[in-house]
Length: 329
Ligand code: ACO
Figure: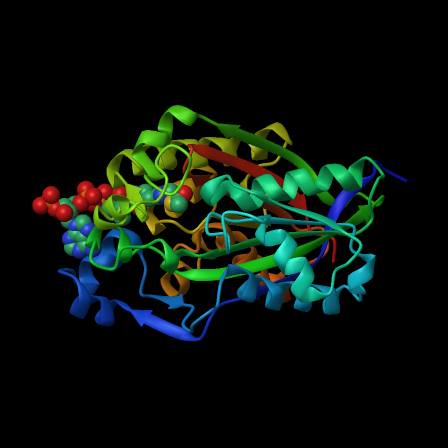
């Protein structure tokens, strides 16, 4: 028997039906399919349409799938963490709303905000409750309705983001599988380059903040790009090396999907061939907290027990990090 670890035992993703293509965006703002493809690798993204639908409505679909796959009754779940930057409401936590909608009555639940690194932060937070022996069933959700904070008249940001989510079940493992190692970091001085200006306590919502379009994503793309490309690549490489692995030992890199050029740079820094890098940014764009679980869900049929995965992310804050996971099924 080896150390008690938190293993991912099920994964489910969800993306809404409506497809916003580059061709549709060409009609909305001054952009081209060619610019978007060469600068970002994005072809299309999904958008949650419909009155009264929010982040929790997508997340609950993923959660239900995970409960079914892991043969878990809702009342067995002990903790649900939702990583999101687009909560249904400022409060209560979207995690509370998801739990209610999924019939999860015995868990405590909370939201976690680390922008695009939220899912990996939440995975490590959830894993602590398993590793301590306190809990046996922890749900970790990454979900964002980015279309609710994107200005569709701003070509610099509206081409990047999409809506989507995913969820995983964490359970105890004593056979050497699960979350093996992680590096998580943040640098709040990066906030000037990527944030939402209004709607918080610094600048509560007012007619003026709405007129000034201050409730949307504000991003200085180039500054964020420079930071992201080095931090995500260096951290993923560090996790690989400090666990005695080389490129041959890594089965998959599971990168946050913000920009194909950042993904490629991370794969190259680790010495991985493109076949070992999960990429679906062309179909979903940047779904913020949804990207990594959406990748795991899509690749689930191709994952084998014992595969070494490196999850890596970078986001607003700045926040970044990487996790080494030995796949458990
Ligand atoms: N269509 C056509 N032209 C455009 C568009 C567009 N959609 N957007 C910008 N341009 C123009 C600019 O105006 C600029 O024109 P100029 O040279 O005449 O001034 C030119 O294209 C180049 O713009 P840049 O911003 O320098 O383009 P860049 O190559 O940096 O790509 C991008 C922009 C894709 C945003 C890139 O910088 C990037 O991916 N940044 C990192 C994003 C990221 O990782 N974010 C973190 C996660 S997100 C989160 O945490 C919520």
